[in-house]
Length: 317
Image (tube, rainbow, N blue to C red; front, side, top):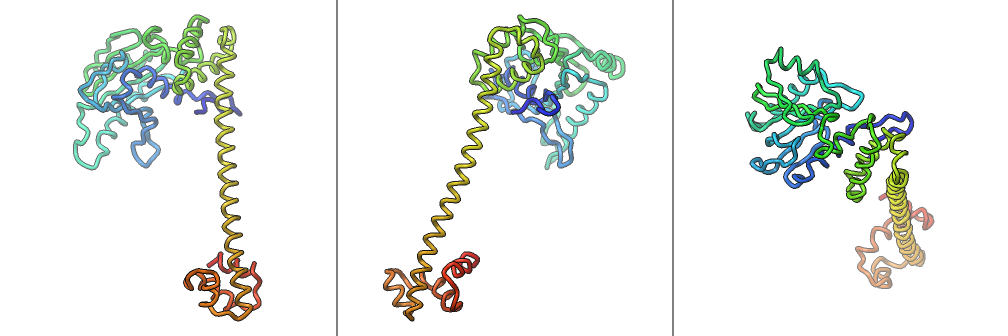
């Protein structure tokens, strides 16, 4: 999973967030289905992340997912972006569209839906709007978690900068403003425990690229980064080798097939040159006349053609 555009140096935060949210909800992974950039229609309109609970009545253990219902829509803003009033209405509209875009009426009940808005910074203007204009109640229920009540659809806002370091290490650290070596060290230590997990690899690579100077001060960082880079290189190399081998194998098979057919044409061509009948040729080749007939007809119908020319006709037939 590429996290950075090598030409521009742009860091792609959304794929890392998609991996990070799965890390946070790992304890309930068997009960949750994750869809990145869920398309709402054939037009370019899509939800950032859709999380569907397989067992509706089974509660999610993690703090950020405790309020989840059957279908949960998440909107994520990257560290350099902010969560605006219009973002709220966009996601709310997408949620309503998702509910209505079904074959039968009310296939997705309103009671199955929740909305989660995620940003690094505290969305002051949006929260003021929700309180003063929408008349909602906004309550800071836990570090970085703001519960929005007053709507038929449960809504929460996650401010990743404020999330618990203990409970939400990975989402909290998904930033280009990681502040201390201690935080970087905690991430590295946790990654080492989960280094075989591709989700952890995707997030740590993004965080390391975004906070390179800080991680250079952490022991073992360079080794871990090079290990990730090497694994990606090895994977790419294997893909290229496998592709080349498949191509060469196909070419060898095609060449062998061509040789077999050419040998068969040569044999029949020589026998036809001696004016032998189809039945005699089939008997001498210990096969049925039907097996010889296609090549036999081409030779008879194209006197003077060479074996290679007969093969070209046969291959194109």
